[in-house]
Image (cartoon, rainbow, N blue to C red; front, side, top):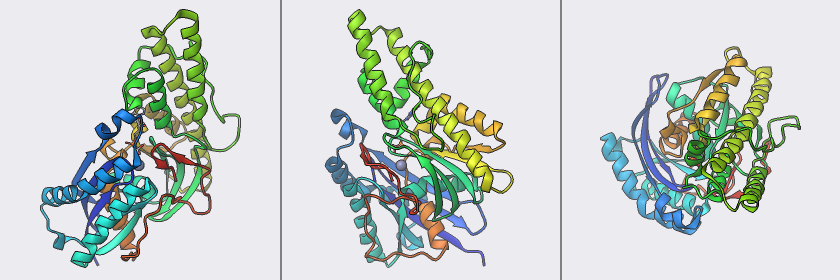
Length: 365
Ligand code: KG4
Ligand code: ZN
């Protein structure tokens, strides 16, 4: 039987408050009816990172506005929905609680089914939302808060092949920008500087390349960068424009090389278990980096895999991915009640917990 489902999604696990409506007829590609994102960058800019208490309060204030805008833009009423999906973790717990409470309120008032969604599953299922690809596929989540390789087998079945043991790459870009006095977010500013730089002038480490597997480490890069910067300042009294560009280029090249090699290994592992026509998809803000994206494309081509990068607005945090992940769970018969809990940590692959501590943007898994 063809069943059309319409789901409202809420996202508030980090520094974006978002609501979206997604509709899908069974067997057809999903349609994003609306997607509203209110970023909080200016609220946190003075503090050099996301301040959890400020984030939670801003989410609580903005969520109902976002829901109203998402429903208006989709031109539907709450009564047209089949379910309400909400990020129930992992993330900064105050923000996650704000979202879960808002969704519970809507569910209690309307009688609509509540579906808790793992934020990482939202990212990991995005290539199905944008490109309609079938399970299984390989996924690289690469952002300011996440970095991991996953095989997606089903809406709630993921195998984690490896990931960062400390910082996420976006975090490394942001810290580098701070150390060099460049504006936040660091990724775009470091990438812009790197364009005019010589990546071979300074030697940055290639962490964990000497070890087998797909785990990554990025925290050593900022230490290396700090040492190189301090050495130049000690030798010459300050940094020239060219010094800064060369430092950015060397730093970025290290990340590009490391991600390319680990992706090669992840595709190799995936090919051992995958059906023909393997697919690798990427999500997360760092996927916006042209050098990283083109290195990943090249590696995928070399390994005979199709490479998918969703549009940037769906790579970064948004609620369309949460609505869609909720819709996929709903189709499997999953339902949550008003006892749904908000979880600061929630690894996608329960058999392979991550080794991470909390990051600047909350727990990474
Ligand atoms: O996915 P996202 O919006 O939020 C989460 O971290 O969850 O990713 C933001 C991160 C920031 O750390 C930002 O510096 C990084 O993505 N980023 C980039 C680029 N654009 C954004 N990193 C490298 N190169 C870029 N062009
Ligand atoms: Zn995210």
